[in-house]
Image 1: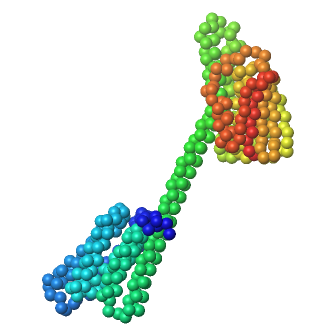
Image 2: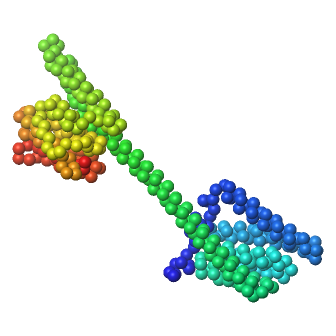
Image 3: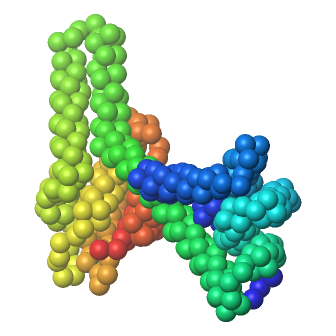
Length: 388
């Protein structure tokens, strides 16, 4: 048996009664009060006790009860030497009861000290204290040696069984507390993950749309402010307003898609990509055996496609764009390639938050996938791979 088994205290949860229900607490209190009352009645009802003897006996019983309460609190705080001192005082009190002729309180006190010591003290100290108390009990007991031995061994085993029971109860209480803490931490982690998901949705849906609208609205404002002939600049202003309206419609459609995604209701990925690439003038190819994707994987493909095509529009206007959706054995791959733009980056190149690629990469990593992006010989490529 390891040395720590003999020197370590029982678990704090097994020494306290915090895990007991209110009903069990009240039952325990009633039992203890009834036991003390019966003990006091039997002790004080002795006919050979005079008034002062009865007063001393009553005081001894009260002090014993208080000593047991103090012993419980000291062991709960794991204070060994004060606990041993108080236990020794209770055993001496039992000798005092025995000397005064009150054998029943003495026997109850010795037995209580032995069982309580086995239950609440480190095992090395508990064995010594229990052996001392039970040895005193056996010395004054007038029954046959077989009865005395059986009773002594039975009390020692009862104390050890109570120790094992309280240890098991303490372990269960500790495991329950750890499980509750783990569930709370899991709930907090899930809440943080959901906040991150909502934040990414807000960025993916609104950031590009609103920033692009601001650019066009600012351009329209400058045209109106600086123009000397509004009728001549009417077509340019109208073009800006129409572009803003289109982007607002895109933002509204994206918001509806995001809400559908949060509810788990989304259109097939291929239909979405066909509409998106057709609107952007890109070519779409689909390879592999088609299957239904999980909501998370489908949403990642949608958002990465939107981000990649938006970046092409912003940074490489006029470029030729091809998109490939490939259903691999255990994953889905989206690859968006574009050639070098035929024109200079437009006003939209300065719009956006600048966290598009970072957001796409985070989205892929959260799903256990990867995202690679960078320039190639013919232009630029974005490649997403997520489990599906």
